[in-house]
Amino acid sequence: MIRNVTKKDIIPLLQLEHETFSFKERCKRETLKKRISLFPDQFLLYEKEGKVISYLSYMISDSIDIPTLSLSPKRNDKKGKYILLLSLCCCPKEQGKGIGTELMNMLLENTDKDIYLLCQENRRSFYERFDFYTQERISLDNRTWLMMKRCCKIKAGGTTK
Ligand SMILES: CC(C)(COP(=O)(O)OP(=O)(O)OC[C@H]1O[C@@H](n2cnc3c(N)ncnc32)[C@H](O)[C@@H]1OP(=O)(O)O)[C@@H](O)C(=O)NCCC(=O)NCCS
Image 1 (cartoon, rainbow, N blue to C red):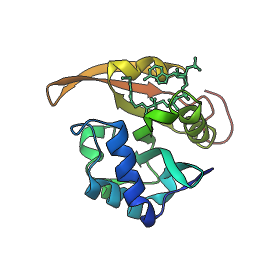
Image 2: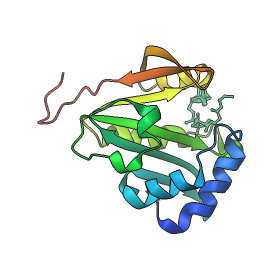
Image 3: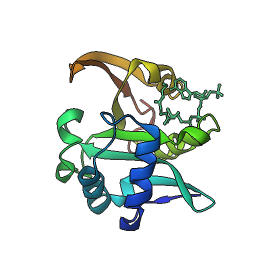
């Protein structure tokens, strides 16, 4: 079942982050809490048998400065031009079963905005499946990140680009 996040989900989300990411990559409790309280409608959870096993969260902005914005959830602006995908993860036991794809498709089917994300090289081919392409490589925290972009084919008003 896919649903929006609520404040009660913070503990299962921290557990999911713990299972899926290294300490350095994990989203911190305070950041998650801010995202949950400021834009729960942009935070989708995938629940299976009562357990949160995957989630996707994003911001909306006119800026594409993801490193800064991801730590400043208050700067979310629903009227912004771009979607910034902040996080997509699935717990290791459930990976490869199509859950990440389902969450991603739900986002893509419900937006007419271009989408940006930052990821490591080992995720590039996953995002290419959804027509993301590498716009540039940036250096952050001594690592190289790919800035990937997906142009929305349907623009507001129903016309194709
Ligand atoms: C990336 C992630 C969100 C994808 O979610 P998921 O539910 O496992 O993805 P899906 O099952 O929808 O995968 C769809 C396809 O993408 C592939 N895929 C999954 N993760 C991938 C990745 N990191 N890189 C490339 N392809 C990937 C799957 O094998 C599947 O291919 P198939 O349709 O040919 O079988 C999830 O795997 C995750 O949270 N990973 C965290 C750890 C991580 O990033 N690992 C990177 C490798 S070390």
